[in-house]
View 1 (cartoon, rainbow, N blue to C red):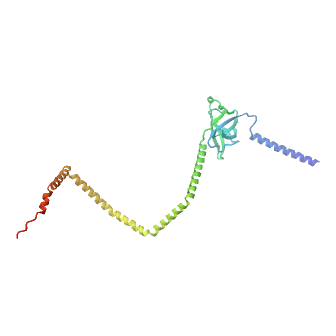
View 2 (view 1 turned 90 degrees about the vertical axis):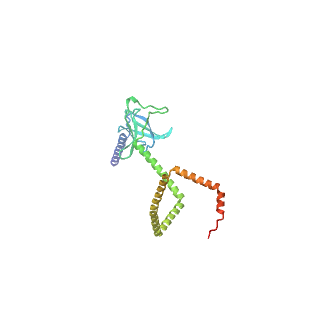
View 3 (view 1 turned 90 degrees about the horizontal axis):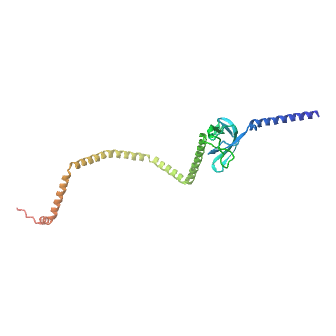
Length: 268
């Protein structure tokens, strides 16, 4: 009987210690019921990777609350709405900046609150909502994530198109490669002839060079000759030739008679 009593006492003591340990962990990690909390909706645009239930909410780097849930905006699926709860004493204003941040090198996401003026007043509660709404700015890190996502999607699309092109034109590409190999082999087997041909082209170029110089000189001399002749003289010469041909035309019958007239026999 005494042994059974000792076992029961040890079991009860162990159970009490475990319960106390769980209570301490819950008190340390969970929200304290003695601290009043206030809820806000934060609207994010774009990628919100790293933000989820239980994500820390910080104000000027100090933890003031947590994210309770994350969901797509039912009015605009390009936006994401995160419901956060922060200490009621946190000075959240209508112009408080909201950014998505990451803590250190661990990559753990967080919602960063900062700034705000008393003149701006408290955030308004939009029509149809039950809690005030804040609109998050796009942080540099969020822009990097969005750009990286777009780059990955674009690369994937490009690779898919390239694969499709290769699959569609596989036979043509193989034929082209075979033709290139055949042409290369032909060039290799006729390398001596190609060298002779190139040498001939080089010699022809050497001959054409002086010929081109002579043609240029001839053209220049002709231009000088033409420029040296007066246009009036050219016109006069043309007129003289015209008059001469007209005269020949008018006296063509006389010329015929003269040419067909018998010549006198030579005297001995």
